[in-house]
Length: 415
Ligand code: NAI
Image 1 (cartoon, rainbow, N blue to C red):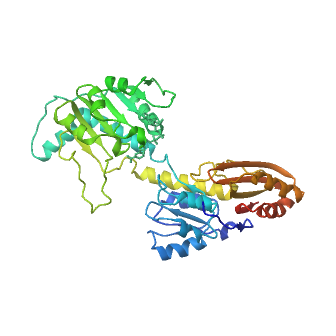
Image 2 (tube, protein in one colour):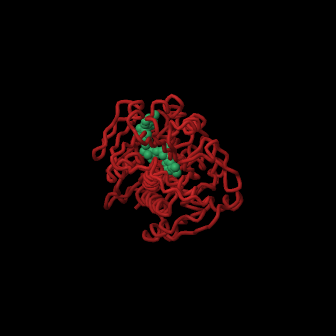
């Protein structure tokens, strides 16, 4: 980590002086949250160029971005006043998160705001594939009227196998059961089954009993081509596969062969090993043109409801940090959830996490004769975070004591 000089932020300030800048057309729900807390927001529809961004970041206390605005170490180094960054999206790759941590700047995002959207798409696809609706629709577009029931089924009574029983998998489980499906799941972690769902002992067992297999695992070394030719061979003949997780979880050539041979009756894919970078970049995939294969452009989580929830959820996390120093949902700094205590002042202190620093903090406070009413410390990688509650008359002296500690990155008083 690059060593940084202390950047003291000595006072709480009135809400009307807090400069919150939201870029990239962030949803109105975010504005409502800030305004309800007496904070005015400056909005920009687009992501500014580097020069304009540098000017904005130099003065902002809170910066809200989506996926287009990139914040690297140099850009963050000019963020003299920045308290926090809100990534109004799911991922935070666009920000150098360790650089932000090194500057004592928490990043907040909304990892679960689109959970329901993905779950609903999955359920819709389970029905569409089981009824072969897309195939019928394509025939109709070509002028063909085929009313045959061959290969069409109800989902009621069929077994849905969920791989990965996390936030999305568990939602899918609840929705599927409400339609009369039997739900089995496999997860590497022990999970509480919801409703009448039940776990299998292995992935192989899940594949063998499921009429529809739906994937809800993260992308990682263990899930890379988790569904390969071997796994497909263990699925029921005529089973269906849904992948709304990450593209690399499925071995696409193996899936294509299985569908061509009729071993697998159909698939729905929202994610791909190589996804186009934008509208002008053509979609290339071996899965194009196949019967009973639903292709969607990574829109599992893309709904207006998810956008609204992201706006609200990230704004609430930012307001909570501004008001109380709570970092319980931050992605890059030590996590402390600390409701403010009535009548006390609070000192927030980010510091470099090196041996002996807590001792120096406490010695410095003791030498100043500060009566500490509550103290919480957490560390994460190379950064430590202390939240200190003191009697009101002591807060300035407590701040000065903490800033005297050489490892200080940033500090701030709340009252
Ligand atoms: P989560 O972290 O809540 O759940 C993932 C679950 O998978 C965990 O319970 C974990 O223990 C389990 N798991 C990990 N490795 C496993 C393995 N090898 N076998 C079985 N289980 C395993 O994640 P969440 O929020 O449910 O998301 C799931 C996936 O959905 C992620 O890949 C995420 O990126 C993707 N996603 C896709 C979206 C889209 O637009 N299509 C939108 C949102 C998420």
